Amino acid sequence: MVDTNSSLRDLPPGIAALLGVVVGFALNLIGEVLRDVLRERSLRRRLASALLSEVSAIRDRYWEVFGEYISKWQLGQPLDKIGDVARNQNFFTVYDGNTDKLGMFKRDDVQIIVQAYTLAKAHLESLRQASDAFDKYSAQIVQLASAAHPGASQLSTQLSNLTLIMGRQLKDESERLLKVTDEAIRILAAYSGRKK
Image: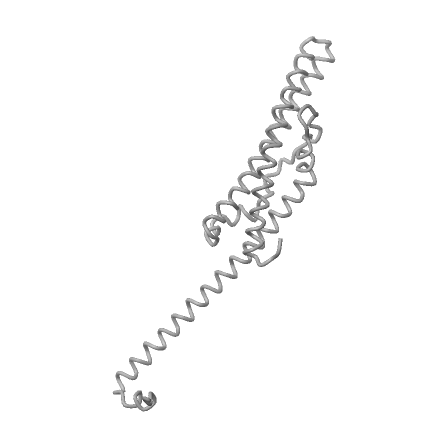
């Protein structure tokens, strides 16, 4: 067995000092890397937690206001719940303010998260367009009907046809949105350490 203490004591002072510097540098470097890894893990967990809170709140509110309704909608039924769609784009403030940090997640997970938010924004735009179209047609029908114009009946038929087309589109978009959003919630919950 080799006595390492006596081996180190036998080294010339210059080499022992150099060895001390190298060991100190290596330990410092390992410490820095470890701190960076822990800092990044903490940032990733906090970002995931914030995104999870946002996307869960948006999904829950969407289901309450429109998602459950459109999931039960049947072809031929009126689209009663289109009405006034929120015009505010600030639903996605956490996501919009942190897209530069999405690289902290695995590539495949980023794709699902981005897809969920993109589908949500696109669906919101579809709801706005549907609402605007219904408002426009309804106003024209009322105006023509009040003047006893025969075009009111024709516009009413067009509105019924539009309801069928838009209803099917909105229902398909909603199903896809909810599926991808639920997957994004599962992914973000895993990163944040929360169970979902």
